[in-house]
Image (cartoon, rainbow, N blue to C red; front, top):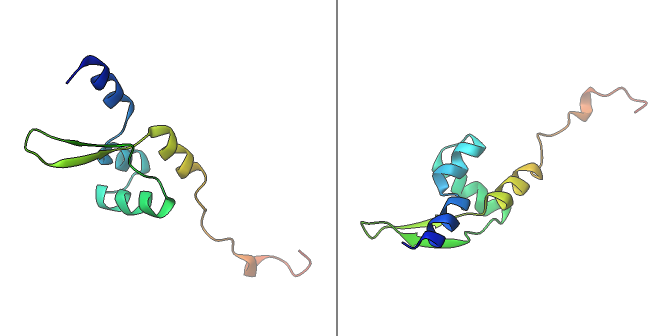
Length: 81
């Protein structure tokens, strides 16, 4: 791997990095990213020939910041609101 490839790989996150950021398991992180429309920026192969995806951390952070929150309990509001 060239030095510029290593620097680029350091700026991209594996699914394990994404899962740690979102505080979920890697399988859940894959589904979450898919639901949010976050696509892998690059796919690489490890030393054993297994493919893995790399994600843009800024895109992951932006999608997490824009995710919908838990529902608002409108049934607990007073009638005049």
